Every structure is written in C-alpha cells, then in structure tokens.
Image (cartoon, rainbow, N blue to C red; front, side, top):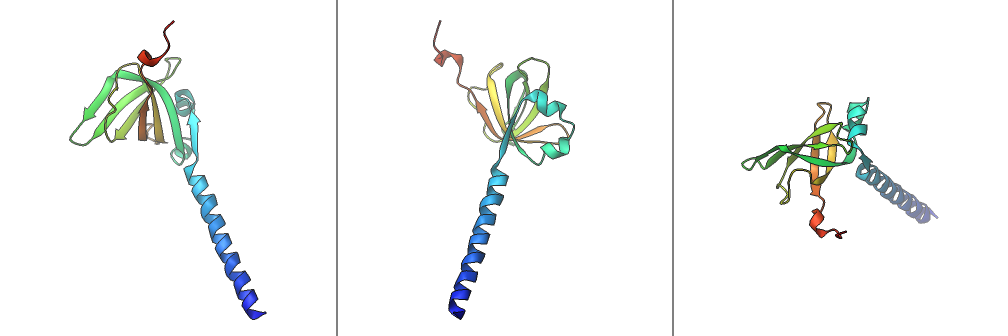
Length: 133
C-alpha cells in the first residue's frame, strides 16, 4: 500500500508540473492582432508592451532607414485610413521587396516610447501575382 501511495503522489506531481508548463507556454505564445489605430489609441501602453502583437499597415517608403552594419531597419507603417502612422524598429535582415506602399505585417511588442519592436517583418506578395481584371 505504501508503494502505491508513492506512485500516485509522484504521478500527481508530474501531471501537475506538465499542466503548469502547458498553460504557461500557451499564455506566453498568445499573439493579439490589432490595427495601427487601436495600438496608438490604447490608453494603457505599458500593458501592450507585455503582449505579443501583430499589426499590419502599408510601408511609408521615405521613412525607411537601413543600417547594414547593425542589421537594423527603421521604418513607419500607415493605417488603412491613412490617419495614423507607427514607427517600427527591427533587428534582422531587410526583406527583399521592401518598397513604398507594400503591405507589411509586423510581429512583436509596442513600447511605452511608442515604437513597435518587431521580432518578425513580413511583406505581402506584390500585386503582380494577383488575378488581372
């Protein structure tokens, strides 16, 4: 009987630890999709910095500043309604088709300094691949 109790206790501890790891990793992996207008209008900028966000917009071409020595890319994206812009800082390789007006999706965190720190920058395919009218 004593061995069964130890086994049940050990299995309970293992299942509890496994459950905790699953829940905490799921909470850390959550990404919220927001528009530029929602991000810039948010009253609680500090709370946004704790969450992973995905934001899309159009690239403002004249805002692009690429520093290859630091592999640092700074740019702005503009909302669909053309009313709000958001500065983005990305450390990594500059995408090939990074041209003015291209649709860009950034994945990362929004800081209290109101700069989006991107972990990923994705560009949508150019319109030449779309069906012609």
